[in-house]
Length: 125
Image (tube, rainbow, N blue to C red):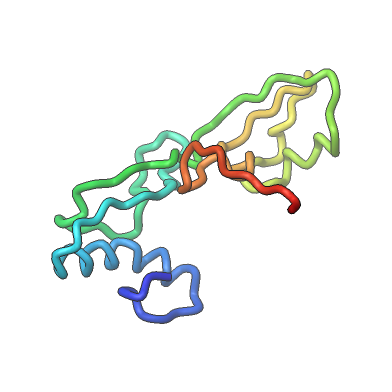
């Protein structure tokens, strides 16, 4: 959490403070660009940030996690395909009889990473 926001252990409060942090930084003369993923509803029409301010005029989106995607059936599946019906972004019926999976983008872990498209990785030294 940003030092501008104060301290809080509540994730909800941290999200609400995101717009406030921008406002505070801009008021201190610090030019700010927000980098965020969004939860703007499946149609993209919902407000995706809890707070906004006039000073927050630069925002980079990492994508709408609620956007619907259709994954084609695979010849080989590792894991349990039925989990698509209960994973975050999925619902009962996400997995079709033909193996097609319709889910929100958030079902793919890291798909809306605020780090953006990158070559970051990990390896053992």
